[in-house]
Figure 1 (cartoon, rainbow, N blue to C red):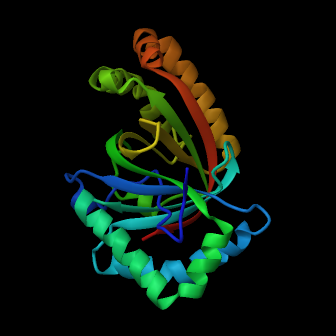
Figure 2 (cartoon, one colour):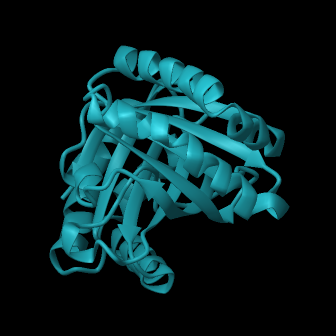
Figure 3 (cartoon, helix red, strand yellow):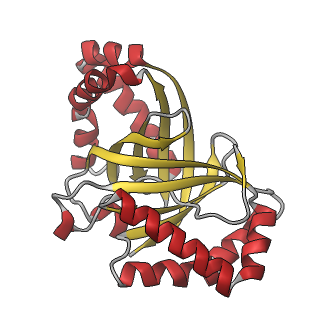
Length: 249
């Protein structure tokens, strides 16, 4: 956990625009721990101050998208602000430029935000597999997201990803049946102890919970060997349900 002035709160669950379908996708994400009695004020600051700055970066092509998520259930993280891009260096440069402009032009808002959400965990994720419509997770996000953060044996990265790829047939079936809006699977580039991320978007948290329950059952029964192998590498996880408050573009 880190203590900061104000930093970019970035997250999870995104793909790039269709024109960039062949490009590698990255998400820069910071998961914030906030004062629960004041976190609605942090939402206001993001809507009124942060949003125009990041919308401008989307408009000029500096980033591909961004979003703001609010805790609905899970661990201690309360908010996430994420940005998306196709180049790690460019994504970090955009983050730094955003923070500099925020602090220079909106210093009081930056200080107030930090007083509410003063601790955070940073991650950068690399896209491995997911829904085929590359712009869908940015432009057509529903109200609810569910994320599974996994601690895995990274020395077995290729094997665990191959095992997941086999099991992903269950996720594809859920998507085709319309039970979920999208799904994606991500690999750790930078950050804490979580080395893989699996997430789904759906119409409601109830829908997502039912979908992931049935999905896990299908993975375990229809792909038993892959399920056993994957779980032998990833023995610890933390689930979160996120309210998708803002998603751009």
